[in-house]
Amino acid sequence: MKILFTTVCNDKYAVGAQVMLYSMRKNIKGFDDCDVKFFHSPGIADLSEKNRSKIQTIAPNVTFHEVDATKYISARIPGAGNRAVECRSAYLTLESFRETEYDKVILFDVDMLCVGDVSELFEYDVQYGQVGVNTGLVVLGKKYRIEGVYQDLISMIADRNGDAMDQGLLNNYFRGREEPIPRKFNHYPLKLMDADSRILHWAHYDHIKPWVINEWKDKVELFTGEGPGYEYPDVSVGNVPNAECKPAFDLWDQYYNEIKDHIEA
Image (cartoon, rainbow, N blue to C red; front, side, top):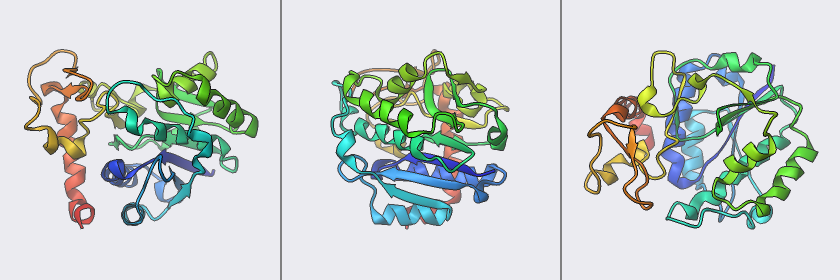
């Protein structure tokens, strides 16, 4: 069975990508026999040669595809907050629908951490599978990886208001056709992490990702209190992790420290 993992990455997320890939190699049976493709594009998702080299050292089965940005320039993005500047890159995930030579294509976000084996997804009998409405991890069978679907999705880019970006677009297009997969494969909120979790997702944190946590220590109060698992003081900060989320951040640090010398070289 031919399996492809796809993701989108820019220089800002390169450290997260390296840790995610390392965790995938460590925990997924047969991962080294799979293909992994990173989509990037100058001006939309810039990924330097240095970062590409570091990523490929972590996982030699990674290849990079530079996407023609023309079709994505018109993509609408959220109108509020500094999050909007980099949101257009998220649409590059649509290139996954052109990968027709594989039995399964699994889309993943790089602000994730793989903490268990997910190889059972290779055998899942789904054509479009995701956890709830979150598209941080999507399993594609062959049915929708055709040029017609790809062109439909591209045509929708300029028509959407951009608030939910690629996630809103995909949920709208596949409404009624999506097939649920267990939450353990895209586990969020982080406070719900348990022994069955396979992939943790920093989905609720626009800015405070684990690889930049030190930049926020003097700006906001981190890992205090309880409640919903995150607070939202203002749009420039986004959600702030509370005490219940700290174990997930600590686990990410453990993986980071195992490859710290490589990342910081």
